[in-house]
Image (cartoon, rainbow, N blue to C red; front, side, top):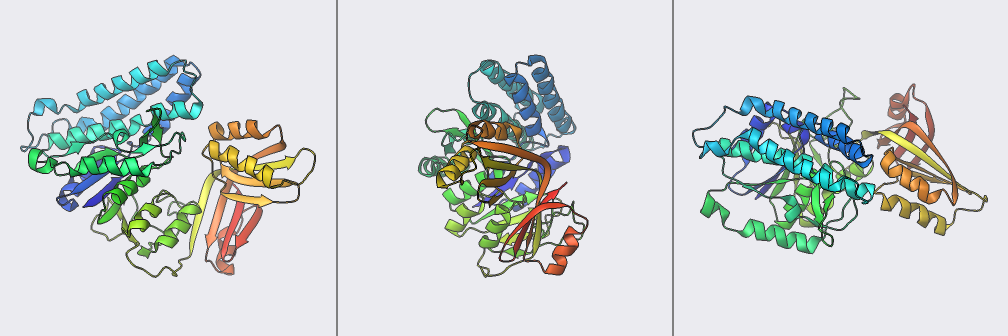
Length: 436
């Protein structure tokens, strides 16, 4: 079997949905799982809805929900009359009705959460995953409209997680069991189903039954979990780029395609912030020796980048990784004592509880500096938890540049004209905290 994952850019308009169907028909074969993200910028709008409801700005929340509906309606309008001759019961394939059904469920969810005492991150997880639900519901209706047999599966029914809100951990044993139960049903013989369609990014807490999310851009990880559990032949991630590049082509026009990467290289790149693949994606695939192909949905005939597949684990490609919107969190002991293991444990516990990762850390005698994603809804609780013990200063407007396996000349060229606060390096991996 194969697992396909389509990101938000691939379903951001009507042509994207047409292209998705063509790719599934062309490359899908007989046994396929399709994982789809939220359309376009839906997740960003839903985050604003969360903030509005959380602060009891109900009219603003309703206006934002209206924007979400209109954005989706605009995407599907060109598709409404495209009914394939192979479709059955076309009266049941009305895309606008499907959209309104799920928008009503979102509004019902928001009403039930209004005034809730849930933590911000838990509240967030109950709402933001509706972007993926809306997206896959519309893809499903479009498949039906065009006679493409499939089964729509709610990922929350199969991906079992813990309650680490906004960065949930997969509970592997029950997740594998549930995925097998879905996959082993003889749906193809009974219903003419040619693929399973589900959502990325979302799951459900094993204990409370509440919705969870796997971290922003976590749909890659969902697809990896499915591939691992079902022993897939390969995982294909369809992107709006030709594959994995040695730099972000939006920042560096001369960026080059990397035809192949080892698992180790891919892990290293994602660890330092390469965004073409979610950081958690590689390990489940490596454990089963499942290759990952990053391919372009704009140029599907191109080979893209193959990750895994038996390459030399010692190979190293030079690359540049830039993480924007970073904050420098500087913590100093209030009594100027050393920051001991106990203090470090306290700092990392506060980060862990909010789902924040230290993208870079620097330790001196009485201070500890961390570069983290500048997410105020995660940073504020961290600062509140640590402020009784440390003087805290936050510097914003920064980027973290990681130059991997570059010559001295290349490093100087990349950083020419840039102002940086400090640098840190290990072997031939250099990191710079750069003022934007």
